[in-house]
Every structure is written in structure tokens, then in C-alpha cells.
Amino acid sequence: MRFEDLRLSGPLLRAVRAAGYAKPTPIQSTAIPHVLNGRDVLGCAQTGTGKTAAFALPILQRLSEPAGRGRKPSSRIRALVLCPTRELAQQINDSFGDYARYTGLRQVVVFGGVNQKPQARAVRAGIDILIATPGRLLDLVGQGLVSLADVEILVLDEADRMLDMGFLPDVRRILGHLPRQRQTLLFSATMPSGIRTLANQILRDPVPVQVARVSSPVPTVGHWVQHVERPQKPMLLLRLLQSIPFTRALIFTRTKHGADKVARHLVRAGVPAAALHGNKSQGARTRTLAEFRSAQTPVLVATDIAARGLDVEDISHVINYDLTRDPETYVHRIGRTGRAGATGTAVSFCTEEEHGALRAIERLLLAPLQRNIDIGGCGEATPPQPVYATVAPVGSSHRRRRRPAGSRRGRSRPGLSSPGSMTPRRGTVQRADR
Image (cartoon, rainbow, N blue to C red; front, side, top):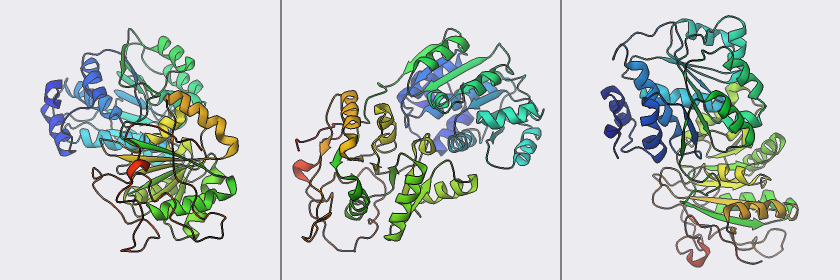
């Protein structure tokens, strides 16, 4: 199927081509026709599936139709997109900006952690689409700076994460300011009971759209686990990053303090790294993400909440420094690599106390993770060999390959050219016996 087959307008097709997209993803080809027809949609899809375009393109089409191309923005907010984090809100705003460039429609993003005055001025200047996090939106509505009385289309994105972060009461308050007659689109990576209850209350005869089992691993990612004692984790991480070719590496820790500690350890060792978590100011988070996207800082250490909705191309490796206790969170984490057909590698560090979490992940995935070679030299007197020298290398599908931080030009890396049996088949999750 082509985007032309989805009945999208000329300006939108032009914007899609300018963005470099050749054909729609499964969720786009499935959801866009229903949204164009005015139906409510209950979408269940993993990250990296093209979900934003699945609602942004038909929303722009529907808002453009009454007055046609070149219409001037009104003072009425006609579409509202709610999402849980500042980073995701900004990414959605950027996507709307790319797709709406030839339509004459305007959008604004509002979120907390920054001065609200510029955001309020932007809304008063006239917009068609508002992208917002719940807390800041309620602040603006409560002050009479934003009216939601004319919203025709509501999108709840990452609904399960909004539930996890305690935003459900705020969402319900926002719903009270919206017209009862509207089109509602709810997207969630998982469908816990709280989200199903909310969907039943706010959606009218919704069309279910699901493009892959929530617990299914990304098929282009190789999965590894390394058993390690907790004190050895910092050295293992450093050796890993010094032994593999990577474009960008995303490292997950369980806590904000842990993210800062890991990032400081890497920087002291000469690896360009930065931490991303909720205690950072909005300005610091924006700068950190910009440097990560440009590969100026190719290693990002983040907590789950901070990284939720992170959409950065060419993340070749995801490293679970702290293994998550929630199996589905593992799937979301590794979904940051192996996107858009590129190959990727996921490596998990597992301590003795994390064995239960590992078993839960493997039960959800219906397969074991591949166990890699032993930790070479960590805590030993013998000269160390490069750790993870045979970790599945980044495939040729990546557009860029960077020399790993700390490596020497021309230095051989045993196993990288011929990983042999140590390289897992993409899409499999296997582990050898200890």
C-alpha cells in the first residue's frame, strides 16, 4: 500500500514525501482510513510503529477539509493531543509541524517545567491543534488562558504510561472541559484494566487497531544477557562500550540517582555520556536530547519514565544496566533500537537478585535470552580480553557507523568480523546454559 491509497490530500502527500517516507506502516495503513471516516479508535501498538503519523495525518486532513488549503488559524482549538511526558509532547509537536507545513494549520505544544507565558501567548495567537501534558494544560485552563470548548478531535497517546504516572485524575478533569460530541482516539502500548475501563467510558463504538502482540520482541533486535555481580557492572559497561561499534547507545537504570552515577562513571572514563531523568530542568533535558540526536553525546543514560516516547534514529544498542522487574517494560526498552527495519542489539546485565526478573521476561517472550561470553578480566589478575567482542555487531542497515568511544583506530577487535555462533538470529531470544 502507498500513502496515495489512503485518500490523503496533496499537501499532506507532499509533506510525507519531504519527510522521506515511502509507504505507510501497518498501524498507519490500518488506522488512517478509520480516523478519516470519523470513527473512534482504540489503538494498541508498540513504540516505533509510526503511531504519531497514524493520528497526525488524518487529523490534519480532517481539519483542512472545511476551508481547504491555506486556511488561516482561528482562535479555536479544534484538536487536542494529550501525552504523559514533555519529551513525547515535543516530538509529537515536531511531527505535526513536519506534516502540516503545506496545510496552513498551526499547532502549539504546552508542558510544565518552563515559563507558561510564551506558551499562553502562542495559544492566543491562534492555533488549530494543541499538544499538551495534563498538568500544564489544567493550569492554563484553570487560569482561563485556554478554552477546550471547540475541540472536535481528542487523542490520548501513551495512555498506559499516563495511568502509571498518576495522570488519570487529571485526564478525567480535562474530559470535563471537552464537548461530549467529538472524535476520540486512544493509543496505548498495553491494555491494563484501568485503560480498558477508561476506553469503555470515553470511546463510542471504537474500531480496535492492533499491530503486533504487545509482548512480542522487535524482530530485528538480537537479545543478550550477561550474568554479573553488582560491583562489576560499571567496569562491564565500560568494556562493552569500548569493544563494540555503536552509533548511539541508550542505557537504562532503575533510579535517577543511578542514571547520574553511571553517566559520571562513563564521562570520567572518557566516554561522552549524559543522564536524562525527571529531576533535570527542561532546558537541560532539551539540550541532552539534542546532543544525543546529533551524536555529539552518543551515550544516554535514562530512567524508564524519562525515555518513554523517546524517538531517536540510529540507536544501535540498548543496555539494561538495571534489569526491569516489569517484563513488558523490557519490550518497551528494547523497542528503542531495531526501528524502521534497522538491526539492533539489546544487552541486559543480570545480578543474582535479578534472576527472578530475568525469568519473568523470558516467560513473557516465550524464549530465553542469549548468554554471552564470560566477563573477560573483570576482577581478575590476568590480562583482560575485550568484553562483548562478539556481541552481534550493528548490521549494514544502519546508515552510519561510529568508532566506539575509547577505541583506537586500526585496533583489531576479536570476533567482530566473524561472530559465528555467538551472534543470535535477529528476532530470537536465546541463552546458553551457564
